[in-house]
Image (cartoon, rainbow, N blue to C red; front, side, top):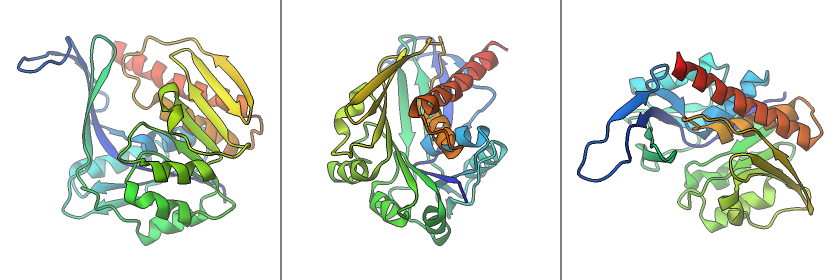
Length: 281
């Protein structure tokens, strides 16, 4: 069976836009907030899996939440997006991971993240089964103590994707090297490219360069795609959605990486356009 398992941290997100820059010892007014999702399901696995599901592919998230109302809401939202929740483990007596995402007038985003689970996450039997049986696995930023187990859980037939983030706690150098050596496709931005270790000549790298250019690199061959930037204020999850759209294209037997990338770009663009529409409503 063809299906995607997207692993990493779950996050219950509260998103706001600010009227001014954050500074110490002063009040900064909130100018807008996402009333359509307060909170909303966040974290890389949710965006990757949701994008694949919207493209018609079977996808599930492998992550961890607490047994609070926020965790229950997280699972309900992923279900409504068509994402399988059988890989979401609930940790008794623990709160769910939460993030406050504050977009400032200079277009920067201040992220305050409470991991909540304190590194107590563990793969349960159902999660291990999912990882063994998945035809496609996407590793995103998540509990570092589990990444080697996740890598060892996959079978040789599964295709491996890595959504890289500059989080050196989640990705110490030895883990970066281990993932780099196995990944079939790596997604990163220009500032993260130096974190990738030794790769094979067949590894595909999808690298964003600024807001209007994405580069596709396979071995020594590199090609670029220019995209029309959107004036979206809330861009959280756009890169993960691009990755999910790319993966969905490969799951649908799109053999041309450039075409898969264009479909991933379309997925990210649709996410941002819908957010812009909702903010204007």
